[in-house]
Length: 278
Image (cartoon, rainbow, N blue to C red; front, side, top):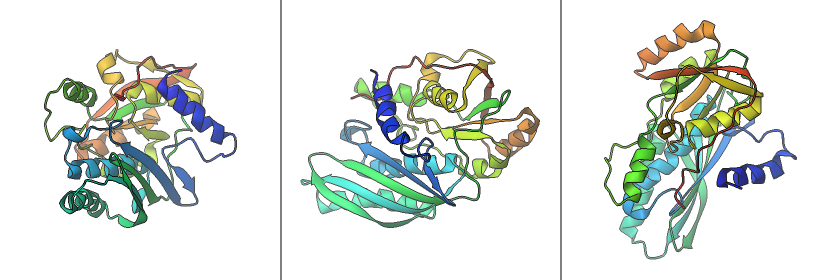
């Protein structure tokens, strides 16, 4: 059983007991709760990123979930396992990364937990507010499928790091670029959405299961693009009648759109290998 199938199998043990599980975050009333882990030697290696960069990315990947659900982050809970050999200077650097991103998005860090550990492990819960959450379910037949930005660079940069190379500090693998302003304005025209954390093809399989749909691709998408994880671009569907409106909003916010498929009857299955390196 491949790693992602094991994750889905585990989550399904709780799906049987809850109707809330299944999206980027859990919607309760007008609040959205999202939680992501960011663990050393699973999501990053210590020599690849500074402590500040690690903390910033840990926050951003969680905020990405909130944005994809049309929710504005308000509060954060941090659980951090810190190696006992870290100095006060290193701990301060780590904290500064969390605080930088919290300030950028107007988030108040309200608590959490810290423990000693042999490696750096981070888990963050973001509490967000929404007027109308966007879910992974609700796709209509003939909806157009779209993703923002360019895909493939995160996979490329991860492979460079694994081979001992050096990547740019501006790499999306180091710091994801989120398109919050675009999505909040365009959300009223969108039927379903999620962020691309495990790769475009992985996320399409999830959407297929949620909506009992397959996809008619308008062009071939190479494996290095479709299987690239850690991108944190937005993936969403919308009716054809709203295409011009969404394109105008994207132009306003300087966001590149890729309309690549439409929803049809059937099932879609992804053949990508897991993108993590453990």
